[in-house]
Image 1 (tube, rainbow, N blue to C red):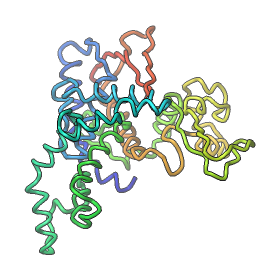
Image 2 (image 1 turned 180 degrees about the vertical axis):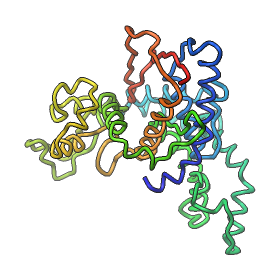
Image 3 (image 1 turned 60 degrees about the vertical axis):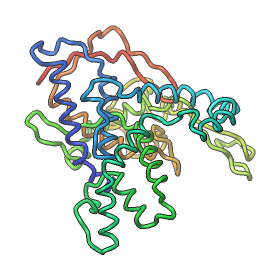
Image 4 (image 1 turned 45 degrees about the vertical axis):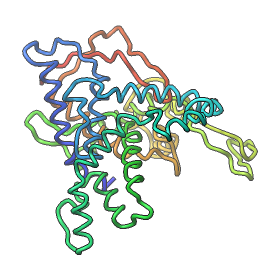
Length: 354
């Protein structure tokens, strides 16, 4: 987490843009009486933050107020596909891995590049002079501000790795990992740093707020991002799991939605009750943390976990010190759809300036 704190300056401009857009579109002269599809705007914000972290440039969702180049639509289509072929893998060989499709793609007869890849290529081209300058400075033994790790975005960091070991970190791999980071970091939904007076909340200011910590943990517990089981393959020698022997090669998995409603989390685990994290004994809190599965566990924990937490811990106080929020229809619950990630819709709110 300490290395990610260096990236805080990269999200500040996006945070300011987010606050400004919400104010202009949904507060303004109407006093906050326009209905805001808040879930949609949080997603726009998340994508633009990832653009800042990866390329030091927003993707344009907040500025345009729309799904830029159909990136979100394409992502959701891909998740629909993955949620099905993940359970029936053979289907992948009939569709995306179909030899005819792959043959056509290799020969340029079929365009299989996602819009985000085009954005990445354009961003690499825009910064070619900067990146080539880094290579020249490295050969001459000189250094410059862009070569510093402090505040450097992911593109700069990966390019430095390319300069250090070009045989391993090829230019093609630089492109691949920057695009892959955008996909992985998408789980990191909310970020924010702007107070009403323009001051910025830092990670150091918010990381030890007990009730904020409890609310975020409870939110992740009651609504984990991934709705399908996180699967693993039992090693060849087999494994004892919950007192039962499972043969090697068996696919096992657990859904966070099921695990998080276990009695280990105390009374009424199906209810949203942040105080359970504050009232628990030391032993119970340890057991709850051990059963917490929102980001997976072990060696395969989500690589976007720390960025997600950094964003959420900063956004919640930033928004709540800037705006008052009211549900547009308190009797109408939001709609949930499980397509690998569980996405909510109909999260409609009124926004008023504090």
